[in-house]
Image (cartoon, rainbow, N blue to C red; front, top):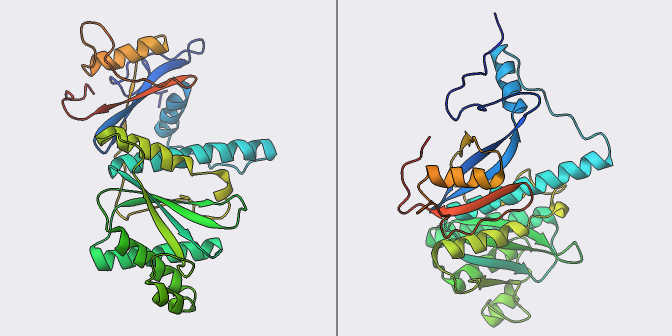
Length: 302
């Protein structure tokens, strides 16, 4: 059994070139999310997919990840974990077409497991009363690190008074009814007797995809390393069944980031008269990314 041949790969599947002296090549990842496509262009190490194909050819599985060896490795692992969670939260918010940001607070201080119980009971109440709503929720600690509140990106109109009463009922359910009399005395919506509050923010006057992108950016920022040791592996909660579609990837022939961007836009029909379209491109370091609405896009070139 000979070595696998990487010299003539299928178009887009493997690197167009792979040598020890020229190991980096630009690659585009096209991520569908909601009403848009996210394009991410960056230089990738071509040895990694080549090694993966080599292992697959010989029937060798992936090596298990080892635990970080020292504090520096742990810090880097934590940073990468935060970045992955932020990215997924942002994509989920785009997927549900979030157009509102809602903050849920409690008057009393509850520990972290109790906050999750309150949220689960709240969501069951809302689903029973008004059919539920799509959400991406992230708990955030106050400055004292003990008191928590929850930020949720949601889609669509909600009856804020009904949502607030469901939130109060969920809080009271973990207090053994001790606050029920206070709730009854003031109607349960405001004042010192209220166990908490629900506040809706619309985040500016933007509309459509611009508003969704803005809210997706806000909700992603609430993922912090303070949450990592205590919450579940995903560090956020979302409506059951909401999933981000699998991205498409393609190796490019460009030798620079600018050339790679132009190659991607040319293949997708986004360049008019040999000029870049009026798209805002973010370029943080060694990558570039931009969003394109799905309306009017041609069929994918791969």
